[in-house]
Length: 342
Image 1 (cartoon, rainbow, N blue to C red):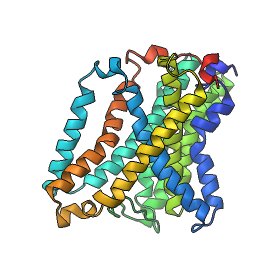
Image 2 (cartoon, rainbow, N blue to C red; image 1 turned 120 degrees about the vertical axis):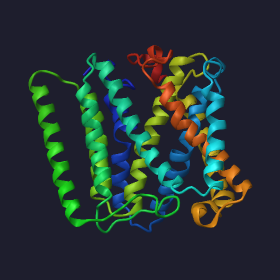
Image 3 (cartoon, rainbow, N blue to C red; image 1 turned 90 degrees about the horizontal axis):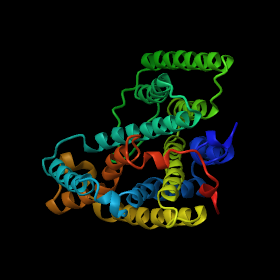
Image 4 (tube, rainbow, N blue to C red; image 1 turned 45 degrees about the horizontal axis):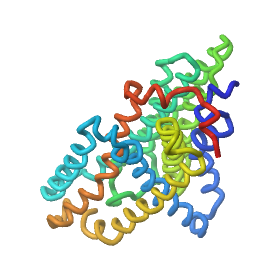
């Protein structure tokens, strides 16, 4: 398969940085004892650097690029709207803030999988609309089935954010439904392969997240083996794709792959670490149970400010990675030797 069919220029780079980080993380987490120092440290790195940290990388494509910053009002309007909305939500003690954030995060993750799949289709020279529907079905279905899965719970913001309702009968029915979906998709891909449609990037962009979501939501039993792989499957590819896009948009500024990765990693470590410290020492002392206990105006404002990077990342990403964005032609091109200059 030619290098032009792979986003990073080779199957090895795409598999390691885009397609398989989540599955690799799941395999590693499954091998470690639940209370081992290695797993605790790995989970900390995944949460602070990969998850919290990757959010801040969006700034390099948006507010830190003068031309992009001047191109749209969303770069100042979104942060103001986030602070106002979160502050009012907390002060009015409206329920469901953390639940909304959890489900919005899942949607954001799945949309990234969709975008990657579309990227592979562009490189293959053939857009396949059903692939998007299959991707949604094979990732969202395991997540929905998890809501009725008996015997497993995970704690996120307030400890009870997911709308879980364990039900053995619905669980078995859901497993059967997912098995039918998976077999139907595999049959379709086998038929395409026999017809000469050989698109491994597109196929893997569906198979990898579908397998990961099936294993995490339907098989894994601990919080670490459920959550850590999901964070890695989203955050690590974001590092790779952001680095690639920056080098294509501003090659004179981002001259080497190693230097670009170092800059992004430093951004994630410093700002992700600062956010985690703020969460632990300032914000979460009052806000998890805000609907019952209430919060002060100061805490509400601080929480709103803390959520600005996350929610701006979600909204800005939906804008800057669109196929009709003015930078899309430059970003979504075939790999070039300069993309991987060390």
